[in-house]
Image (cartoon, rainbow, N blue to C red; front, side, top):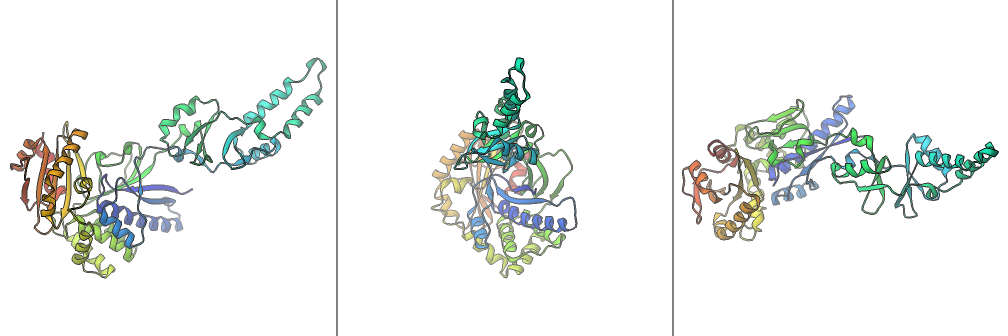
Length: 459
């Protein structure tokens, strides 16, 4: 059976997180197919692009334009019932005879069969235990003073023609296939039977979970792109098997139990690393993947103007643009324009669609980023912005919330801060007050110009 590997970026995903996950899955699936032909151990995985939050507008646009489905939304990576259950259990109709059921149990060397009604809905389990109990019942009816083997044989023979609905177990523990496994363990272990049944929304059996399944369950397999920090990753990441990390940020606190492939480069975009991986493995980049990767490089490097931009970013942007048949800068501007009107954008999208938490010694801070070509439109919404920032501050108990609005044209950022402004002001040697904000010329990168200073100086 092909194992699935989830590939996803950080919470509140930006275009780089989404696009890198989609493109890297395409590459990994190509490599998996190639290795399968040569019988390499790495074969047998299916890589699934995923996301930890709402889709950025530009990501929706570029994926839809190129015929890609939206990456699946996941809320955690804790092991689920569906990760350990035996799928598509063998089933019988409630009017099946015990003789037929027994033959199926022996043929497939299994302990239980799912019993279904006329609508194929689950109504019980028939097991070797039920058969054994029927045998004991047959011997119990014997008059031992007038012992006759024929009495036992006759009783057992009668049982062979009984319908399974007459002997099946109905006190079966049932559960949703997507429930977190740890939430099902206690009830399963306490159940009279040795297994539970996973049902879908229609009441149909989709899997069986045994106690031995629970004892030997594995971890969900994941690849992290565009992050390597637990605060920015999926809940339950500590329980998952991280197979690879592809990132362009600082090395943070994600740990593994065994050596893994870690691609961490100090460049402007994770998409650049993914593009280089195509070249390294000699996998042709189709135009639709090239366009997805190019969109991420252009947004994450602010049209190649960010101080994080390297020669590799520029080189890969031109290479991808040639594949697509566009001018890189013109295409980048088109991508930014898809974000829509800053005057009408929902306030939560405006402020927190690209938000990252950072852990200090004892506190957590939130740094939100928004790039725009119309800074005046954002500044006109300052009162609304500050109200929403204050809500985030109080709800999550942050030390402070910083919202940096980057003007892509003017190459600077407007800072708005709620919470402990003294700490933030001390770091940047500014006077960011409660009204008006502060213009920061040349500050356009959260990753290189803001986060490192905050993490280094705030104690």
